[in-house]
Image (cartoon, rainbow, N blue to C red; front, side, top):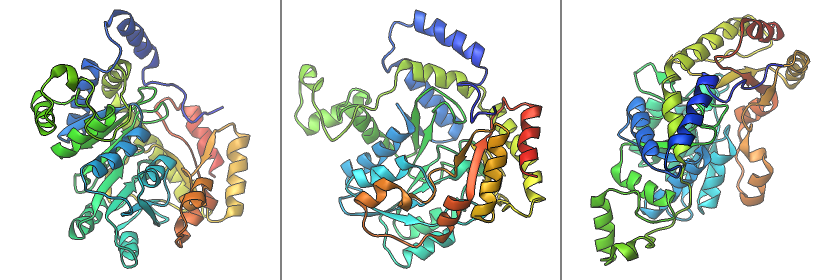
Length: 390
C-alpha cells in the first residue's frame, strides 16, 4: 500500500520524541509563547509582515471573511468569486458569511484560475472580492490576476493550503499576492502540526481584526497599544471588565502550544521537504509527458513547484476508469481532484441558486485524480506509481 501520506511528521521519530519532552516540561499548553514564536517565524519564512495562527486552515479561511465583514470591507450580499475547482472550506465560508459565491472556471493545463478566466467572469458579474485557490502546488498567473483585482477594486484572498513553497518565475511566492492568504498544517500537507492553519498578511488592521475574530471577539492577544485603542473607543476603563468585553463577532479558533511547538519543529525541514516533492513530481512528469492518454500540466510560469500531490488528468472518463483501476490494483491510495467542480457538491445546490457554465472544472471533475507525493516515497514506490502511468 502506498498511502496519501506515510507519516504525520517529517523526521517523525525525532519530532515525536521532542513533542513528548515538550509536553512534559511546558507549564502551559493553551495558546502562548510558542504560538507567537511560530507566527513570527512562519511569516518571516513566507516573506510577509504578519502571521496569525489558527486551529485549522478552514478556520483561517472563515476568519478572514469574518474579519473583512467586521471591518466593513465586505457586506451581506456582496459577490465573492472563488475557484470552482477547490475545497469545501474555501467555498462554505462565503455562504456562511451571507455573501454570494460566484464560481470561476480554471484552465485544464494549469488546474487553476487564470487571468483569462477571471476576465471572462468579470464581463458578466461585478465582484467585491476574489478568494482564489492555488491548487495542488500549482497556481494561476497571480501577478496578472492581482493587477486585474487592483484595477477593479477587488479584494484578493488566496487559499494557499496546497501550495506552500511554490514560487512564480517573477520571484513572488504563492500566498503573497493577496491581502491575506491561508495555509494548512493538517497531517497530509507540506508541514504538519496535526491540525493547524495560518493567515499571512501585510495589512496591520486586518491582522488586528483576525486576532479579535480568533478569540471570541475580545482583545487579549492584541498589543498593549491596540488594547488601549479598543478600550478607549468603548469606554472600558477597568482591566477587570476588559477581560470579558467582546468588541466584534468572533469564534474560538485558537490553537494550542502543541501547534506552535510542532510548527517551529517542522518549519526546519520545510525546504528539504519541498525539494524532494518537486524532484518526485518531475520524475513522474516525464512518464506523463510520454503518455497520449494524459494531459501534461503547464508550470513554466513557476520557478519552484511545491506539489501537494501528483495530479493525473486523463483525456476522457473512460481513460480515468482505466488508470483508477491500475492505481487501485497496485495498492496506491488515490483521491478525486480536490472536490471537483464545487457546484456539483450537495451543499452548494442547497444554498446557492445561480449556476454558471464551468466546462473545464466539469472535465477535471470527471477525468482527474491524484495520489500522494511526499519525501518518504521510496524508489520502489516511485517505480510503482510510474508503472501505473505507462
